[in-house]
Amino acid sequence: MKIMRRAAVVLASAIMSVGVLGVAAPAQADTSWGCGGFCRPAP
Image (cartoon, rainbow, N blue to C red; front, side):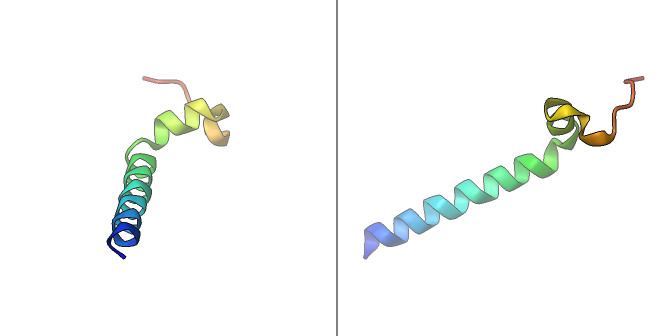
């Protein structure tokens, strides 16, 4: 049972870290995915 609990914690933390990265770096994600339709020149 401890193994399942530990696996659930690891999975949850991985999902949270991916979500935080997605929110923290939308500009980098847009440029790497074809600008996402919002291509504007950098100042």
